[in-house]
Image (cartoon, rainbow, N blue to C red):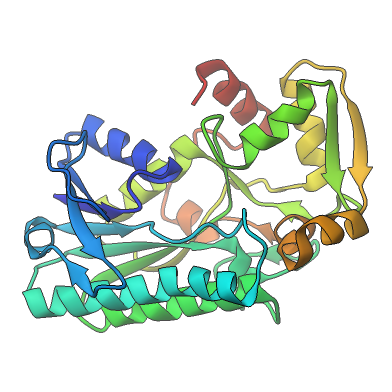
Amino acid sequence: MILITGGTGLVGMHLSRMLRDKGYEVAHLSRRENLQAEFPAYRWDIDGDFVDEKALQQADHIIHLAGASIVGKRWSARQKQRILDSRVKSLELLARQIKSSGASIQSFISASAVGYYGNRGDEIITEASPAGDSGFLVESCELWEQAVENVTALGIRTVRMRIGIVLSTVDGALPKILLSFKANAGTWFGDGSQYYPWIHIDDLAQMFIRTIEDDTMQGAYNGTAPNPVTNKEFVTILAKALDKKALLVPTPAFAMRLAMGEMADTVLHGSRVIPQRMTEAGFEFKFEDLEAAFRDLIKRKV
């Protein structure tokens, strides 16, 4: 059985359904138990230091996607701590409970993010590249990945998936961007030169499945498509995929900082990340071209 934390989120639900279609048994860890849900949900409580042992005993693989959203609320000191705790404490809890339960987990795949690399201009970034120098995104990703070592120390094969911008029309960044195009307008942020490593949600789900099925895979992998684009290219290609003659204008960096504070780093910073290790592992991308990815998502409403 494959046990997923954060299973009801955008990636978690999409992945759960793809796994089920491939014949896997899937269950979720959730704040509320619901064994009659589409995917049976077993209870866990990070603050209460609790994980239902029945879920761990049945699990062959764990995919850890849970974590408070980076975007949404301003990064106050309290919100930053909430983001860190949701990542670090959840991993520490799982490691303790796996150990105490004696569960035989074959692999543990944890989400991370390309924020690990920081703001790197047009430098080509692979999994061998070091972490960025500064910023909350870098700090949170480093602590996130360090916490995975608690599971690795148990002798379990672990994978850290550094995820880029997940493209889906259901949720995430793309629906928000599409709203402006309904008024035949679009925008890039700052000078638009920051690189956005993106990934079609189908390809990302298949990456997770590959890490389960290939027991030679371990360590960090970039969950991105091979062809990152700049922010300005991103919105220009989206307009083309929508077959719209939209007015494309910049939103000045100072305006983003005023509106979002430090959280503006999520859109004003970027890194030219490529999935070198995933490519070397023989992974075949269904969507390497951004326009094709946009057209597929818009057509299928995925």
